[in-house]
Image: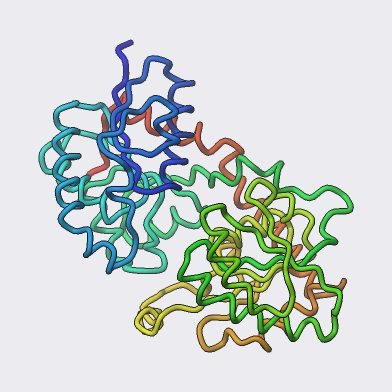
Length: 382
């Protein structure tokens, strides 16, 4: 059998990690596979020689994209030329739709026979739903990380969408608490980006001041990524206590051991749910982004709530995110009782849904990619 040639494009760090795991799974299934594409350090370790540094295209948000627009346009053209020159059997684009989808559209026009697989669905179920139908013209299959996404694409007229599983599913053993765990600190997770840290830490500090009145010995811990340690320490100076900082390497152990969590909306909410840590979720954005929230179409911004289709985890967005509201939501989670039990029951449902596709998302994704490599069949765009 001839060596399958696969071109993979990742646009930022999380996509790089997904791409590396996919490359490992593809090589396990087809040891002679040949890779070309764009990726970061993780994909480079798997043998990819990236067309250019990932930092050239790893931008998020309207203003950063506009600032880097000339570079992005040049890299889109360069990537498209490289795909056409390498004549792959399949193109895999991973997240970062501002870049990867533009490449896919250009490639589809010039190589309509080339299968294109999109690993990670855009959030069409929450924002800009019209993208789903438009994707049918240049994406043959979406590999979904969340179990509700195939139904969303079907309802919106999107391309074929298959739930392969979230990468967290491969780390369930690390997230599952042992007997006796779950009695420790209150975790506070302000966010992974500088803007989130600057916006959320004052709110969480005021919330802790209220909680400390009834829990003067409260143990508070804050996980921190290495590149965010300095700005986080600066932001924590005004808190009413000095929290323990948890290094990234100990984050999942801290999740398992925690009693409850106060967390900014994001993937951390899914990690906490899988670790059976009850939580209250908050989120604040800029005034412009606050106006745009009225275009969001989902019943919740909390991933565990979306997974099970019920608002099991309390959330407080924008004006509703006040210290008093958050303290009142956390208080019953620190003791045994109905509020805590209800969240734990919901998290069991989250876990069951997340493993519906099995415990090896990378292998499932690789099998679908190789099916397109072998058969080259595309779903009609109409």
